[in-house]
Length: 175
Ligand code: SF4
Image (cartoon, rainbow, N blue to C red; front, side):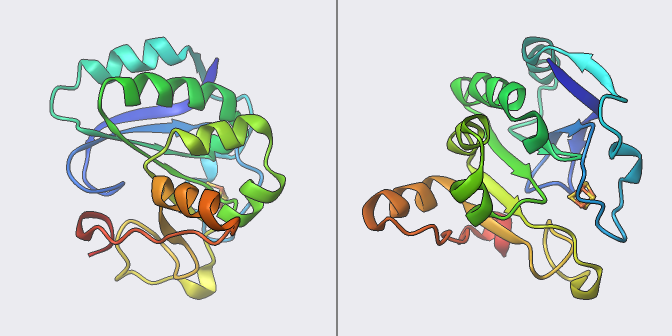
């Protein structure tokens, strides 16, 4: 089951286009200046199955992309991976935010966390660092956070063994 702080239809601030946003409940990063402190407590949200959330997304006809935000979806990686699998099969672009870095998730992440990564198109990684806050950045709050092209990064890793991420070149995300 997912434990969610909420959902939002037709967002324009969590990625390009009109997006459906799924907010995970629970995050232990405790970044100073976090915009969603009400989502930090674990288990304080609403339990929903991936299938139930998927059905709600299907009833939102304008959404072409879905973003997992929070909280941090990587603390509920197994359930979010199940939702991502349903969404990818239906043709959605799937993005996620996390306080973990790409390198940490690949080097020490759980099997479920790596499974979730493998089902994403875009990952915006890293904690919100208030000292690096930059209001001009698109879809991220601080300059340390990166918009990562997940399929390209995994393909490069397979080829070279490097955990270095490939940053998203799409003007939709990074322009
Ligand atoms: S990782 Fe995200 S949700 Fe968690 S404390 Fe940092 S900014 Fe807030």
